[in-house]
Each structure stands twice: as structure tokens, then as C-alpha cells.
Length: 118
Image (cartoon, rainbow, N blue to C red; front, side):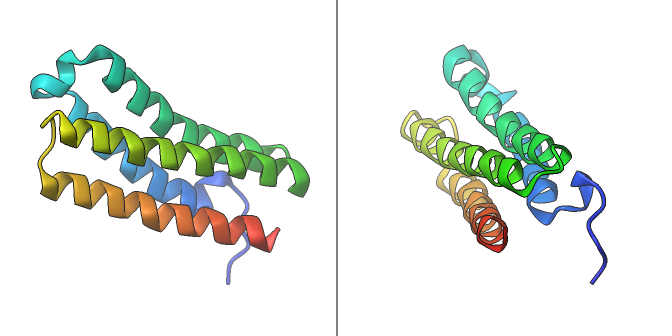
């Protein structure tokens, strides 16, 4: 197994990047694009996942990295909750909800595993 040298090598960061792309795709169209509050909140939560993973990794301390991973993990939950709101408001269909929610579940498990390994 190759040593992780950059935050871009972390699977949890790579998956967060994909989720972020999905978030931007769903929030730039239709009624979702006009709900500025929810659009901003879900985008900030997605951004938080990526940024906390990278910032924690770059701190070069396991203790600090772990703390930032906890923040990132919380933000994944925030995305999932915002997806429920978007679904309830019919901004996204059930297929899109499930697709992004499951990606969040997967990343949540990866982040949790990384936390436990530290």
C-alpha cells in the first residue's frame, strides 16, 4: 500500500469532492437554485467536508487531524439532513436523493474508519 503524502491521496477527500460536484449540480437548477438559504447551507456543508479533511491532514498532527475529521464527519450528516429538506420541497427526486445520500453514507464510513485508525 502506498504511503499517503498529500490530502488528495485520501479516499475520503476524493469522495467528498465527488459529493461536492453532485451538490453543485443539483443546486444550480430549478427551484433549488432559488432557495438561497438551503442552497448556501448544503454547499457550505459540502465545502466543509473537503476543507476540514485537507486542513486536518496538513496540520501534520494525528490529534489535530482526528479533530478535523470529526468536523468533516459532522458536515456529512449536515448534507444528508439538507437532502431530506430538498426532497421534501421536491427540489430533487427520490433517485437523486438516494444516490447522493448513499455517497455520503460511504464517505461517512470511510471518515469514521480513518478516525479509528488514528
